[in-house]
Image (cartoon, rainbow, N blue to C red; front, side, top):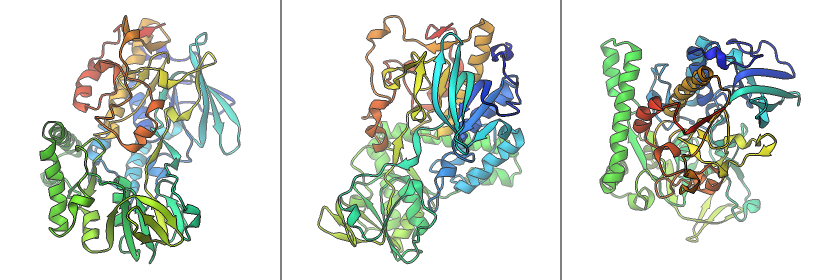
Length: 508
């Protein structure tokens, strides 16, 4: 197959645009230079080197989450053997800091020259598909100057993530204006906040809170994790014994990466299936590990025993159990209650108790962003993604030549980056071989009457950030092809076998 046949007539080849003019034409436009964008670009470079592509990134550097999140202790809550890419061995500890992840990305960019294709500080303002031109016309603002550039592209690859990087979710608590201290959000961490010797309350119970609390415990006079309800956590060493053994045997790092990756994926799959088949056993395993650290006198039932089945919300890994050791040492504590209101000196709870605070940190989650909150249109008619149906969580009915990377809830995000990239890098040459320039998914014959559901079933997975804006996401259908699967093992088998001549694809 000749991938070059897909190229735009005025494309600039694999090296990307050499200069930036008021109008740029490329074969593929990638939006976002985080884990998804860098990984997708690697696949384009190595599998379709004749295609021209550009990456636009609103931030002034690459990394996405690992650049914008700067709160103390920021680290992954997925292991880097699976959160890292299949093509780049990870040699550090499985749970990595933002700096370590940034260094990993830096190596990939240096090795491949992907940076030649990236335009930092460029924000997408709108995207319109022209049926006549068979192109997306994308308006991009250069933030440093305010200038608006036009990018025309045959294929749009959305890799910008799923939440707003410039703001987190902040509940409307009563009395915040009365509070005499400072309120900050973990997602938009200010450089000038002083925690030393302060009484700090971190509101939240997810991965961010579990990371932040042990990172600042010992610096503060005291830190309290205030949660409305408990969350499940897993604990363990921040090391993989198998990887250590294989390194002692001087096994090649690429082999170690693949072997350990497969081991972790297998064990994760076994545990996930247990949470459905034997939820009580899975719950006892998780809670028992915490009880063993905090001891018999700690009220684990109240503070660390959720009321829901494991994996209905994300389970964060706590490396070396640092959160629980900080609690055991008395540097941190957990309060499980509702917030009645803020007071001049702290927070009054539903129970009537008041927690004194100098600084309050909201670790209260994300604001969902559907395809970057970008206004999309087709021949000038606005596209409402909530009225589309997804094809395998990456394409959408009525939306031509567009793929979105939306990762897994119960596994590493990056696993899906590789799968979607493999699909796109098969699709584009296939279109060229067929002599077509447009593709979009279409429901099967009679599918107009298909029963539709939300992007994810709330009974299956229901974190707050998803439920708050679930109605804005695309719909799903009755069969696997028309759903966003959460089963990596199923996708790993089915994605490479997708028949590109299936009637699910409408070409033109």
